[in-house]
Image 1 (cartoon, rainbow, N blue to C red):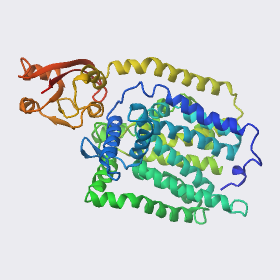
Image 2: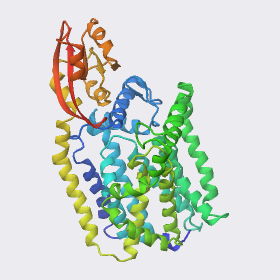
Image 3: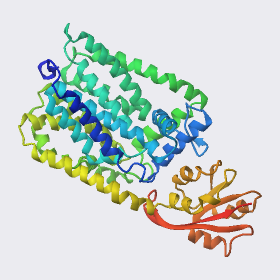
Image 4: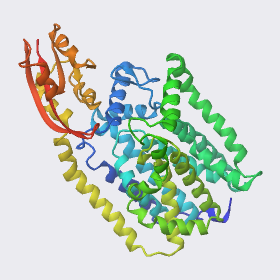
Length: 495
């Protein structure tokens, strides 16, 4: 790869530490805002959070569980990181989201260091701030899910892979060994965060190999380091597979990786060949929202980058972006955040081209300030409103004083994972999902218990509360899982 394009400054700039603090602390504070105000939403946040709680309580650090059942959706890195935060700060919405906040802030820091190394201080700062303020990054940095950790690992691996592709000189030989270790660690951590997509940095080097042919610097080393990374993953993976009799592989890879690519999953992506073909440009359209406000310059960037594709760094970044968008374009399950691993590459490419074209800095500053103001308003105004309309935390607030640890509980016609996370802060048992016909027998059993169900289902089952039971709570709100308004009631038996 082009040696001159990666020449480092001879000595750190006088304000290097100040900029280092800026590119880490700014995204950290941006993503921390409202972290404990917004309730756990969507399907995945409460599942990750509850699986972390059960991992800590049960002591099984190999295989996650949700509601006392195996959860094979993701490898364990996110649960481990959340468990560490819960150990330090206690179990809370804020604690389980902290790994995502820290991962995004560290990604911005890596982009600054990478950009500074390849194109100078300004490009490093711009790349870091572009990434931190992209809309999908702002959203996912506040969620207790695996994506931000994956993006951090991919960014580290992409930078390390770029450095490994430089021509070996006496000056950079020791540095290359350090980046080789980082590349290996990034591949292992990326897989442990979200599976095979964590090996994207290897795919970027493979793309360079295809473009440049035999003799590509770093290609042989990358193949060997991939094998080492796979060995590190196996330290966790082999015991996990043995303890589940191979089920972790069949579910985690077979269902949640391969099947997602061949079929729609949980309703995302639609069905039928015709609709599949219509949705092929999905990510090339949604990127204009998910990468906003920086997507406003994507048409300009595409023209610049294509004209400059002979440059090694531009080609390397374009290759990584193409791998991500190409892979998920043909993936049948589609969600806008799937392309997040490409956002650091887009940010660095945009910052570099912006600088090379000597574009004015004023639009850049306006975009950063605009996103910051939007995030602050959302944290201060929108998040409390979302909480007011969230059924699980509001229902718990109504009845929490009447709940005791030994109680059993159930849910009927209302499948919301957040019920498990919130109500298990007061009770030790797990949530039993059951059909309506089984509820009367459940409530008639001896011992304290409660059930959460839609109000219309409650009206069909009971003209009046069963003997020894009472309606202890009722709430009308918005169920994010099903994207609809709900009216739920809580039937309580205290003795």
